[in-house]
Amino acid sequence: MSDSVIHAGLEPARIRLVLLHGWGADADDLMPLGDGLLAASPVPAECIGLQAPEPHPAGHGRQWYGLFPADWQAVPLATQQLCHRLEALDLGRIPLSRTVLIGFSQGGAMALHVGCNLPLAGVISCSGYPHPGWKPPATRPPVLLLHGQQDDVVPAAAANKLLELLRPGANPCCLKTFSGGHSIPEEAQSSMKESIGSWLQ
Image 1 (cartoon, rainbow, N blue to C red):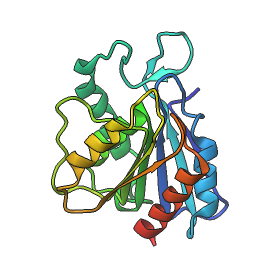
Image 2 (cartoon, rainbow, N blue to C red):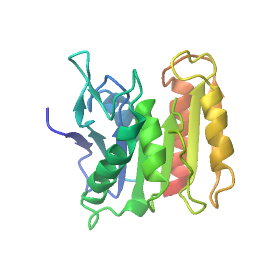
Image 3 (cartoon, rainbow, N blue to C red):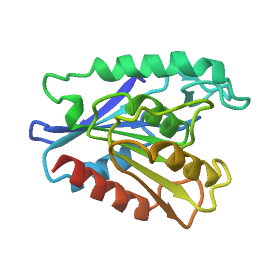
């Protein structure tokens, strides 16, 4: 597989959704979600699923950095590499200001860490968590946090910690919890569509 998967409609895209998968998944994993968001977009859009750079230790899937056990020392390089990849997209056609970064689990942590430092339209973290010592800048894009109340992989307390860290920012940060575990249910997808529509209308 290449390092990204791209889905787009028939018309030239005017907005871009970038998806960051979770630990042990790959770039295809969130594309069904992306396709649903594309179908709901009020303007022509494209969706890019980025592939994490490292092979998962189980022998299938990928990882942004080692997680069990957590290799926190690898986070600075991982976030720097992701930032470079986002800045290497065709920004002449669709600027970062018309781009939403969406991540799940480990991808959610990556989306927040990198996305809050870029002039994006918005950042969405599903079942995400803060990297140790991470402090978001005061000037950052709007953020939507989504988390299952019964998540036994990344406890819901992580979302409350993220909200505490992000609340002082200049743009809004909204936390929406739902009944369920480590997943992205229809309820969460509806919240995504609503936020993307308001950010990119």
